[in-house]
Image (tube, rainbow, N blue to C red; front, side, top):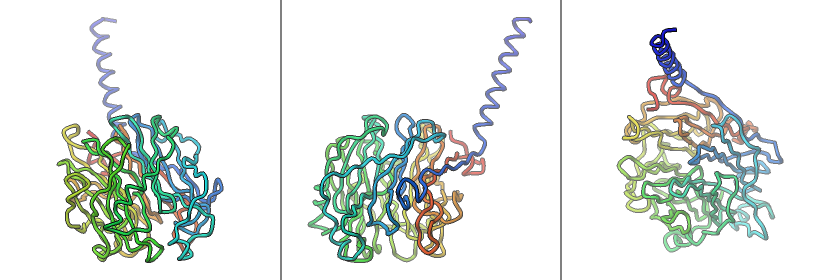
Length: 402
């Protein structure tokens, strides 16, 4: 064959391969995998999903494994599963928190008959990926009374011995005499300046479920998790009523936005911003496009200029403006830093509740959420499921990750 013709044909094949590859990558993709199933491995149900993608692209999915159906105050462990191939396969679940010695149960739960003697609650796991030191930080609570910190330096395979950081929360006492504390849940974030940030909520434990009344604040670290400090109180009951589980994102202008669960009417997600994620919080605003049945939500940045052509933020929660039923977990997309949410697509139209969002290095989105219920009279998830999808699926191919 003529050498020039061979070169032309090879170049044409390269062009065809590129076009085919590009077209394939732009096809809408959505698939789901059940990661934790109620009634397996000795646990009645699994709840409170959290997920992060490490610096190497490993997925870490973690949750509360509840031994009974009695609720937040029963015997609960923290479980994790890992995937090193974008969610195609997952390692077997394993318990990542081990409590040794005697644990004092929270008196407010015992007083309200919410807990049984000897049943220890480990709750509200939160992971943060650290881009500076290539680590995963992990916070969790015990009996809604103490908070612990540990770290993984090997993509979640192992964790350091836990350190008690409850002293950070004690610094709220003069301003808010809490009896119940909780981190997140979901995931925390690292700001551009390296600050690690975790939203928290506190309660005096005198009201319903010993979780009310309540206030919202943050804890943060400026030394890669070695020490932790408290932020200013963001909002407190009764304005709004019983604010609690809160999710953070850093905006393109550097400010930090919190998206807040609460029990006020109208049932719309509350939004506050701060210049540094710890102080100077703005007055709460209720977002008309973010109705909420009083449930955890999730927020994450998908892309930002100049590395990408568009700024994009994702939000997920049960989109149900009619009542308090947890159903229709929906992912929404904002192009203007959370001012508006013009794109919305249901991930799970049926019974569904808590969720957490993560983004892979290839732009694929992971929504780890509670799906179905094992009890028709109460909300108790049947599975924790991860939905993996791309921007083409979310936008009906009107937008592409670039």
